[in-house]
Image 1 (cartoon, each protein chain N blue to C red):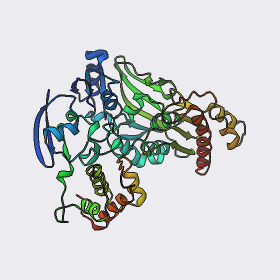
Image 2 (image 1 turned 180 degrees about the horizontal axis):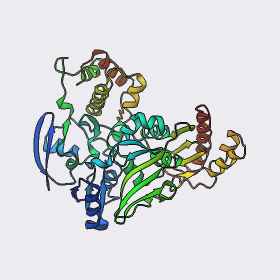
Image 3 (image 1 turned 90 degrees about the vertical axis):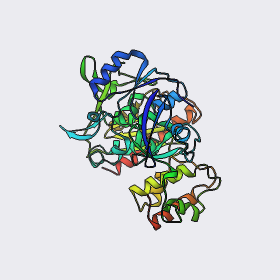
Image 4 (image 1 turned 135 degrees about the vertical axis):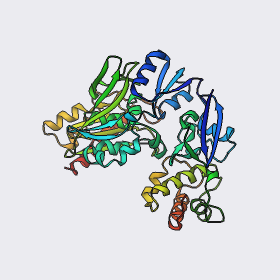
Length: 157
Length: 272
């Protein structure tokens, strides 16, 4: 067991965890934040994407002990001026960027990380940035439109 | 999927990493970004009892020019290599290959040293570093030594790294004037290469066409003898040993090697 201190959505937390605990399990089970999903569990699908020290990562392939002392933002930690939703979240609402919604928390975090780095991405840049997030419903057109909506309306996170 | 139990040990210098490898012996593995090792551990294909976490060793990070080489710290993330103006200018093949590794999340965590130490023949950077004639700098019990890339990859997931070695740097001869190309054929955009081709100057390397990245020697020789790109590319699969797996049959890979080598020759000739 190792004591890890991870700041999640601005709140410092401390837990004793097994060294083999994955960050996604830490977030879901220790922190009880179930927005980030486990999809493929093999670092392919991106449903578990969170922002670690400003960068999008797949939390199924990061150990909680690797994130000790670091800063994590999950989908629960973003908000904004659109009735409480961020521009990315509102973009998904406006452009119907989800159907079943399973991939959405990871998509939102990957898109948020993209727009934080590059507020006006081209369509090619949007698609390149979302390579690591798989959606089985929408065919991606509406997700790309959602990111474009967010880009045009600002206020990423 | 959860890895088998292990003990996590964090070290903060190359010396501490070497000492820890010596101390814990064969059951210990180095952990950098973890994007090759953790998936293997989740599948229980690797079950080290100790992980020596080197990711916070600052001396192993960064990119610099030195004596005609680009020197990249082994713990430098793919995203930094992809975006580095120095790498883009003086080792453009390496910047391009780094941009093809996995997906953005993987490139944010994965490191160049970890990728090559994993020793997968389909790795984007392994093939590119062979084409670029890189040298690996390794710190081991007997001191620092340099391993030329041609002697580094030994077999499936097997490299010239000894159990107590820590890779510290990768040195790449500057090649800002050389034609280059990187071609990667995948089933999904983020996937491992079905076949890849890395070309730098007169060196052409095939990824996923055998247990290790392979020079397309017959093609290189034919070009030196004056063959056309079309003729030379038809020899691309000679002396290769591709496998058949879920992604492709061996025959399909041999065909792809020819197609991608021709594409690489065509693209690189447009960069002269």
